[in-house]
Length: 326
Ligand SMILES: [Zn+2]
Image (cartoon, rainbow, N blue to C red):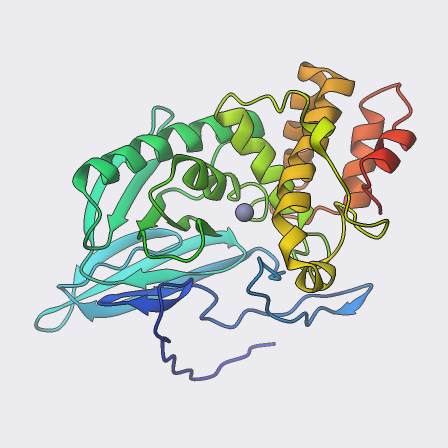
């Protein structure tokens, strides 16, 4: 079947993942994507400002952006510019096996480099970002993409674009091959980690936000040489209903606990799992799990089964103690 339609997009005001900050427009989640239908039926979950509720399957995009030549258009995928009509440039972005297509448009300052392992990286800065901060983010992005690639499998999307704006109300936001970020080493390393946990290995972000956020924050810790030593000793549950594996429906009603539990306790649980399995087994588990779910969809049940298969230790009480259900 073929579906086609015309669509006009009015970008709202605001330094947001879908919004404009002065002359700079960010177009995340601006294009409709096909809803997933599986054994649980159609997934038509509501938008949340608290995090993400996006769930889509890997798809191929070929997008033509016809724009004034004074604007740059960082985007998902690998881009090629050709001259357009007078004063215009046609940018063609090609992306394979991505879950979404996002882009930005504006008179950005652009610097580029290539990571040691060979991934081209472009840093696009809005006005007001210093060249030293842009260089620092380029250095961070190079290290992060190589660190995550070494742990979870080579970055498959060709180039990687980061749009840096200190006016975002959030730390960062991930799209395939395209991230939005404050000037922040931790946030940029985190959003690049999402290329694997959300992007390459997908998940239903509404039902199981920990599968992308906790795994990405764990990856961020590893990339920044943080071990989460004794992290579980500071865990304090707000109620018996609070669990790392709760859905965005729960977190929208308990938003003050979302980051603490899903990111903080979630990554700590993965550090603790590493301490149970041992560093080598944990590293192999995640690399093998990424490979077996490459461009697919992770579920809590599948991850738990994979972890259990990697050890002779019965993990039943581990999952109970860490409130990882499913
Ligand atoms: Zn995240």
